[in-house]
Length: 615
Image 1 (cartoon, rainbow, N blue to C red):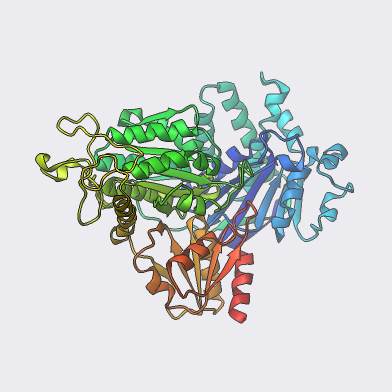
Image 2 (tube, helix red, strand yellow):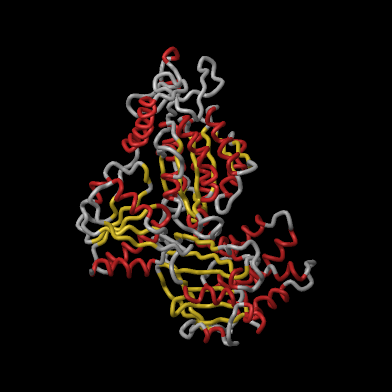
């Protein structure tokens, strides 16, 4: 048959795979993302999991999605979708609001029976009309029944056959985007290597889905996406959690200190533990403790014995770790605490994303307990910021909290494996920097106020530290009032002094901009795209995005005070805006705040920022 396919040339495109949490949408999206990266597209992904462990099948709360934004100059996972693959009515309903007017919708016709639509709370038997989807190209394909037919005669039970339907959908999308199947075949063969029957079944269904698109007379828009010339090197498709793990390993290798992670599983941070367990051959020690408190305490013990020590968690776990982190502040031990932020409070929305732990990271301990706080901006930036967190912890002998979030922790991008020789060296502030006969546990550097770190058990360096206040000169327990004041001031001064050794704040855009957007952490991609689109429309907008939060970069006040119009955009109710006004007097800030458990929408940002300019 003759296909009637309109080929549309685009710079970028957004595709969303959506279905029940058991429909394999994460695997489907991951394979397609990897294919696109291999064929020269920049990618950014957004896996969107249900908040419930296993919601009832076919219901709105059970919808699982995977969105990929691919093209040239990609900063985020995209806003509205150009292509939606909806495996059931619930997936269609949940994602209808995120569709472009001329988008393509591919649905599994077998799952749109009356009972399926009732589960998704449709009031009629015409779901597309009910949702107002009148301008989209709707392609109905009996994906489930075609998958069953494809696997007839194969020694698989019916449930296992039906579970292969995600590969039929993937094959159809690969045809739509002219993606050869060779690489996908290799990925599936590796994924199911221990179960040859599943390899055979998935490869067959994938090919049949591709051939269905090729051989069927469908009127549909196909897309050709611009590729980009990338620097030569070895690339990996990594998510933020994996990049964080690699950053810790790189810091361990550079510093010469063995890496120890003490952690307890918690969504969405668990994959950091899972990844580090794989690297025993590099001397990495990763243990799953019995709870959050034990996780951080084992890390503190490892730090006392000379390791690069880390612990990973999310917001509820950070709350549980707060007392032990205070111990690390008082004992002045290097420690990296990774907080992958999620929706809260309490259990909240464990699979969704927010930036609501900033105040907890800054202030969530008893007493005057100053601490270094950093934030990663993108999935691949998690590598750099884990490296920086380790560097600051080891060179200034202090705990450091690194904030990521569910969006960048689970989202992925193509990452060029870096040349570590180009990264700043890490020189632990330890006893080797002073003569042995001058060492004592309370001795500190006059330049950065950091004490000298000696591993417990090292001959000639016997000492004791703990949570009680210590004498500034001797390190012995002290309750003297003047001494306590001096120690409080010294601990704060040590953190403030770190501003001398971190990179300055970068201004993206001109100093003559009419509006400065300020952001921090994982919102970078959406704010950067909003800024660039506004400048393309003739508006003058700049961006200052923070990765180092406490202490702030030394040039922060100089940068911010160049602008009369400043808007701070964050996924909370204004925590960073409040922190900036506390640290820098005279700032006149506006605020853009959304706490929906979802990433920012670039179009909403542009509308809000434009309104600000027009005031």
